[in-house]
Image 1 (cartoon, rainbow, N blue to C red):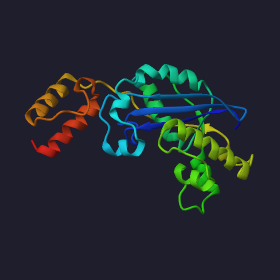
Image 2 (image 1 turned 180 degrees about the vertical axis):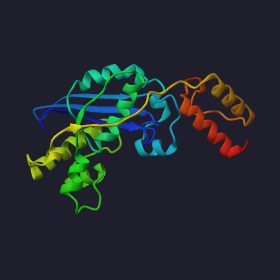
Image 3 (image 1 turned 90 degrees about the horizontal axis):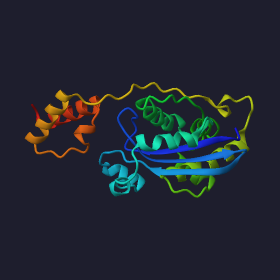
Image 4 (image 1 turned 90 degrees about the vertical axis):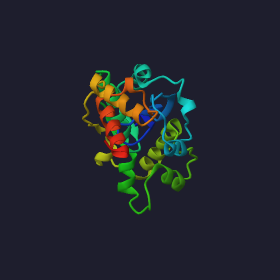
Length: 232
């Protein structure tokens, strides 16, 4: 695969059905050469957990004036065009993009190739196959857990894996259809918001997410969290 988009996301967590994108980095590779780069912060409209700040170095103040995913998605899709995707655990990045597209009623189907799967097959003797570890193993300079830097590192890893192990008969070297099923988010109901406001007021809680922007599932989870912590 000589022409593709390598994409990497930083997110508020690991679950695309609950968590949000906070940074997108992508490189357009044509005939093996990076011809264009794309990079943006994304406002998740919620406070970041400290573990995410520590992992990425991204802070709330970096995101407060950034576009939301709804605002930036058309630009992202224009950059991705119809090229296959490359990623280290590419289904992770695809699943977050797919969820964003489903929420906007935009079709999004892509083929992809996964450097993590290649590393698991051909570098099985290594202690780890994380992107960080592979960069150390191959002596690739790398600023870990920043989207564009991770995308560029993934390209470097892919090139080396291809040089060492390429086999035209090996399916892992051929982009395959990425599959992730997810439902569109629905806004929280008036009843959910009323109940949540009462609980927040009762327990003097400042929510991490704007109640008016919560989905049904977010309002339900947040209500359950309060009840579990403070009781009924």
